[in-house]
Length: 267
Image (cartoon, rainbow, N blue to C red; front, top):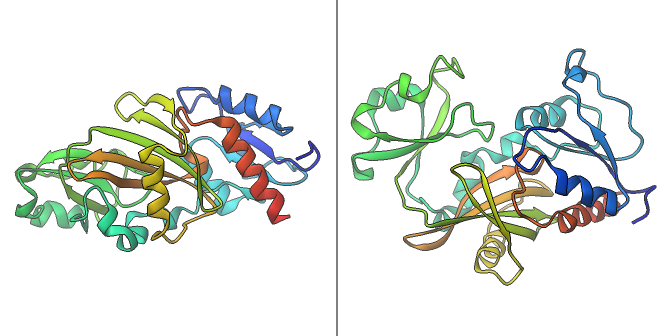
């Protein structure tokens, strides 16, 4: 792809542990242009006029705002509602790490408690991919508004949440999906946000991701899929918007090339 047709990438520094340095280098190698994000643009809700397609990568909150409000195209791959667990879980429930999860709200969970069948400890996370509070393991008998950060990061007691039994995860991988294909992947450690090595197409985790795509209605043309190795083998953990997710050790050249080809096909 020539430099004239390659997208401009709007990159937000300081969000990811890598600083997006490998992504920046890959964009330049592919003939793309880089626009450094400025929070000052949010003050009046106006973004710079940029000719041609623009792809944002940075904080999830800014990705969500760009997808909803900005004039850039595609702007951000962040169709937030489609990444709510309640939107995609039903299609792939049998492939999930925790297929017995239930949906409820913060207030209802505090009032009625988690299912006894889940055991003494449960995992609770927001339904929304914007994650107004971080997922956490709680004692089933002592779930309170305070333990779910109500009043700190959100004020809606009816915030939708998903409750799951606690499952051991022995290893996790992040996969990048572009155009309906897993184009890159890497291991990662969620605690500490530590990247692992890039994995090739024949790696079991990437093959697992490819099989999930056979059943999953695509939420967007570019997105993130996490898979984990648990007691029942490789399973799907979650989906996340492309524009607000860390790529960890995924091959940046492959990701950039796939996105550029996607945009070229759309023109």
